[in-house]
Image 1 (cartoon, rainbow, N blue to C red):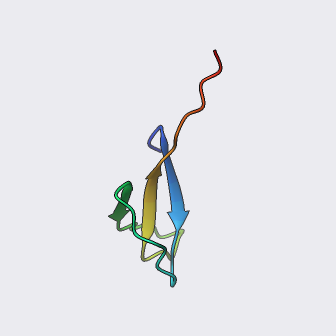
Image 2 (cartoon, rainbow, N blue to C red):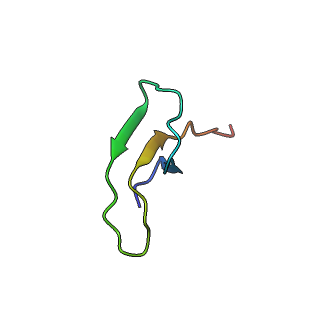
Image 3 (cartoon, rainbow, N blue to C red):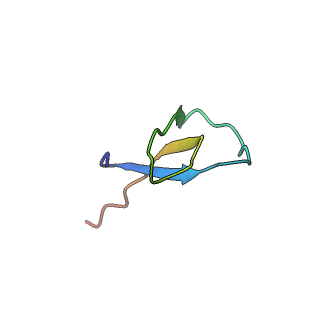
Amino acid sequence: MLKGYEIRIANLVDEEPSSKVHIRKISNKKTKLKRAYLLKIKRKQKN
């Protein structure tokens, strides 16, 4: 998996569009997903 990214499943429902969303097709035999969103995770740094 890509570090700093979160996969949000959107099989039949389209969520609100945002500039931080990248749509990629997942071609995995284990998953029947047609669509997935890669969202950048805002890392909370503890200082």
